[in-house]
Amino acid sequence: MELRILILAVVFLFTTATNAHNITRILAKHPDFSTFNHYLTTTHLAAEINRRRTITVCAVDNAAMNDLLAKHYSLYTVKNILSLHIFADYFGAKKLHQITKGSTTTSSLFQATGEAAGTSGYINITDMKGGKVGFSPVDSDSDQPMATYVKSVEEMPYNISVIQISNILTSPEAEAPTAGPTDLNLTSLLAKQGCEAFSDLITAQNAEDTFAQSVEGGLTIFCPSDQTLKSFMPRYKNLTADGKTSLLLYHGVPVYNSLGMLRSSNGLMNTLATEGANKFDFTVQNDGEDVKLQTKVVTATIKGTLIDEDPLAVYKIDKVLLPRELFKAAPAAPGPKSARSRARDEADSPGPAADDEAPADEDSSNDGGRIFGGGGILALSVSLILGLLV
Image (cartoon, rainbow, N blue to C red; front, side, top):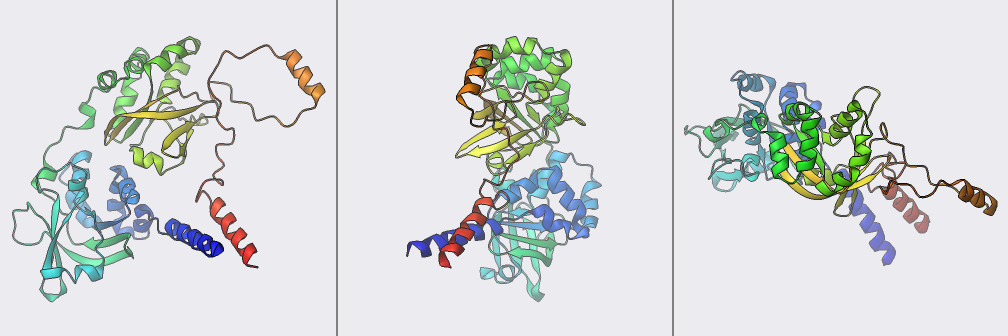
C-alpha cells in the first residue's frame, strides 16, 4: 500500500511538472504572432501568463498588431490593451461553442490586476449564428463584437488555451493616458519607502539615471536596510569610484519581478552592473517561503516588499549583495584534514576575519538538487521505485 501511494505521488509530481506552460515558446512556433509574442515579453505579461494555472490568451496576428502600434501608444498603454486579451479562465474551442445561453462574461487580466475601474476589463463572449464566436469589452460603444474567433492555436485543458481572434480588443479605460513609470522620482520614492541610505548612495555616486532609465522596461531593486548599510560603510569606502557604482547597480535587475515570480524562477539573474566579461550576476534560490539571493560571497534574504507596482518592484534585504568581481569569493568547503595539517593551519591563521557576512554556497549553478531542476529529485525517485518493483 505504501509503495502504491509513493508511486502515485511521483506520478502526480511528474504530471504537475509537464503541465507547466510557456506562452513565449508556444507562440514562437507561429511566425504570424511574432509581434504579439514580442510585446507580451516586453510588457512582462508573458511572465504573468506563465505564472497562472488557468488562463486563456487571445492572440492576434502581425497585421492586427501593426494597426495597434500605428496609434503610437506608450508601452504602458499597450500593456493595458493587451491585458484585455488574457482571460482568467479556460476557454478552449469546444467551450466557446457551448456557452450556456449563448453568452457569458469573463474577467481579463486588465480587470484582475486592479488596473481597470468598475466593470471595465470584463469581456463579453457571444456564441453567434453560423458557428462564429464574438468578443467585446463590456464598456464597448458598439453593439457588434469587436473581434471574432479565428482558430485554436494550442490547448492544454484546463491549464492554458491559446486562440486567435480577428482584431485587437480595446476600451476607453485601457487607452486612457496613464502616468508613465519614468515620471517617478526614483530616489525620492526609495527614501520615502525605507531605503534612504541606499538612495543617498545612488545619488552621491550619480547612478540615479541608470536606475531611472531602466524603470520603463521593468526594474527590480533589492535594497539593503539602513542598518545593514551603516555597518557595511567602512568596506564601501575602500572601493574605487567605479567599484562603488558597480556595487550599487548590482542591486538592480533590469526586469520586473513580483515576489510570486521570484519564488517560481530559481536561477541566475543578470544585473544593471552586468557588462561584457564582468557578469555581475547572482542566483535566486527559494527556501520554503523565503527568497534568497546568492552570490559567490554572501547570501541575502528578502525581508519585505517596499514597492510592487509593475514595472517597478523594490524589496528590502538583510545583507549587502557582494559580487565576486569586487570581493573575494568564499572558499570551497575543505576536505578532511589530518591532525598535523589542522595544527599547521591554526599556527598560520591570522585570527578571526573582520567580515561577518555568511558565505554563499560555492556551487550555486548546480540545479540538479532542486525539484524539477534538471529532473534531479524526480529522476532519482522514479529510479528508486523501479528498483523496488524489480
